[in-house]
Image (cartoon, rainbow, N blue to C red; front, side, top):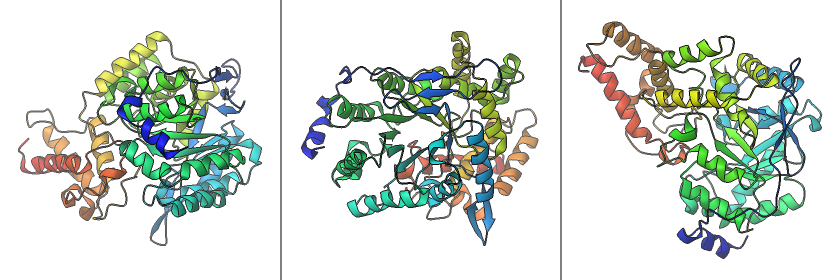
Length: 449
């Protein structure tokens, strides 16, 4: 792609929303049935006929163990999970050089390479956040082949576009020649499908879609954050509503891969009042199954990713998609009511991706946010001294906080350097949120709520 074309396209006047996609490609279609015994549901990629399992394995949350004083991936557990997943029909595995401090691709390659290559699709990314130079980006690309033990990628993504706007996209992929390089790699067959994952505002998304509309880049697929909360309740300032993103992709017949269907696990552990309503409707189904069925209900979705850390969610997801039942219109309305109720809780919009880590000052950012969010959703959150069982809730929070987060890694040690801000795909004002949580903790200690 010519750099001058991109610069022209990325201008404010180039975001043509009504432009039609070239050609007329059918939407992904479902292959399989919900009738009879367990049978994995597949969606057919309309471009090349790939039959992709509707549930995909996200490799950002592999199980970890302590070894020689370091946190490393439990390869034996990963192997067991991958074997079980493939045996039960999951064939899409999504990873990145950035996941789990650079360990994810190697673990995925070790596990997957024990199976015939035609049994699975590999998706990985150009995650050149730290060094956007041509040399470093090409090295990252080639290293992924070695780590994943493959000579081609089924699905290759420009990672987390939207962060930093079009200027960051130009720096990471255009000015260094990487778009031209990747397009040549696709022509050579080493990339079968080229796409991007997106976190950002609607206008940033529009600029990327304009490239597709104008024929500068053909996006074979796109990965977006979509769940029944972000469908219409994304903040609209830092992140666009999934309803908008989905509609723009669907009308262009671009296959969609879903990330964060559980919103970093929060939709598997919803507040008790919401969980009660879900269980009254589906007592034998997990809370998480509602979120996955939401994603699978939309025909433009080719695959919904789940970052499974152990066998329990893996088996539950296989149960959900092995007997898949799309949501009815009434059930979609029910989930919208649940999403509205979710927005009433003072949660931090953290998905536990850990992109902000390591913090240069040692703060356990995702751990602090996870502890806080879990306390709120599970009703262990003191709000006022007049609250029933205030003392019990106060003590439970403070004790569990000290147990979950080592003293030197707690929120009060944040100096507000802002190093984490550019790494967060959710654009969370991390130092501000850490200060808010620390003020809450101090208020509990001083009884000033």
